[in-house]
Amino acid sequence: MRKFFYICWALLCGAACLSAQAQPASVEHVMIIGVDGLGPAGIEGTQSPVLHALMQQGAHTFHARGVMPTSSSPNWASMIMGAGPEQHGVTSNEWEPEKFDIAPSTSGPTGIFPTVFGVLRQQRPTAKLAVVFDWDGFGRLIERGICDVFLNGNGEEDTAAKAAEVIAKERPSLLFVHFDHVDHALHESGYCTAEYFGAVEKADKLLGGLLQAVDSAGMEEKTIVLVTADHGGRQKGHGGNSMAELEIPWIIKGPGVIPGKEITAPVNTFDTAATVAYLFGIVPPEVWIGKPVRSAFAP
Image 1 (spheres, rainbow, N blue to C red):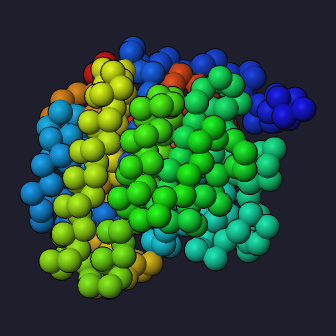
Image 2 (image 1 turned 90 degrees about the horizontal axis):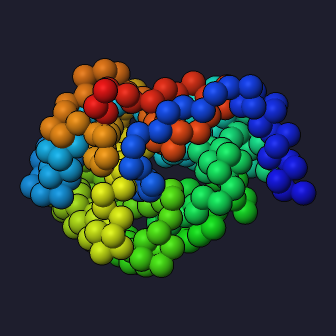
């Protein structure tokens, strides 16, 4: 029955009449690391050897943009839904699948705007999908029952440990790991304080552990790693209209990515979902407005 619904969804989205995107060679796995509240200044103000190595080995920009408002739920939703709040309807952290002010412009079989997880499941039914998230609010943004692994960690260290175990045991096609502790430091101590920088450095170490897990699983040569955030910060908060809150890092490394490339083309957070679709050679729904960040890849 579920397969039938996804076939119907594909027809409604117009995917059935479009040709698939060309997939970069050798990409079999994509791992997205989302660090809540990680503004570019957090990377520039710390040593962060893992993040800086990824920038040297891959492509990056510190001028990618989130969406308005610069709050968590609208931006995480836009990142995985390939569109902005005007389309998906996630306009605040109070949003729930059954409680919203703006209805989604379209919805999939589970009643919410289609995410990259749902689209990948629809077009590649055998793909292994995994999500490990620190903030429990992240989980409600994904179609229910769509992922093979769906885990809510108990803090950043437990989240990293669970994600490393998933990599070793499941070798997921698409893995999203969400860390929340940098945002906690932002709210408790302030943006670009010593405590904030310390949280960024901890995120860097946790990221290093995940990369080691990818290497130990023999996946490194076929894995795209993408590190980004939902928003930056200002003083002890976010949600406003400043560039410090709006701009986010976007760092990508793996097969086909140009080493040492600084991306100068505009990048928006909803381009992340479109880039994942491009990497897997799947057709994005017509309702997505994001586009692949092709300038990060060799011609």
